[in-house]
Length: 70
Image (cartoon, rainbow, N blue to C red; front, side):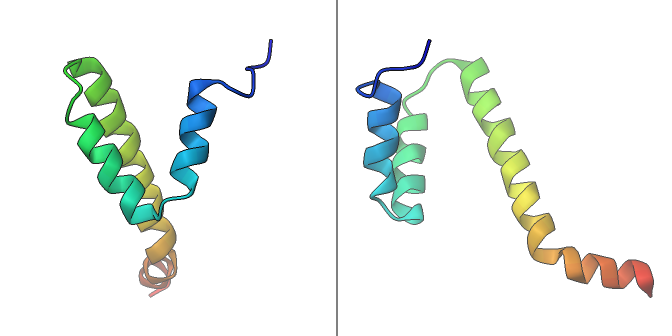
């Protein structure tokens, strides 16, 4: 069954989409600071670390490929 359009997650995503990336990151960091569930924090950290690794790899792929070819 699909989520209704008034679903809280969708409303939050809609509101967050109006913020800049920096504003979203700041807000999410503040909200994550309120979480006391260690497992939830670790899962979020792991997802963020994975995303950061993807961004770094995308940004430096040409440099890395150049080193391999040399």
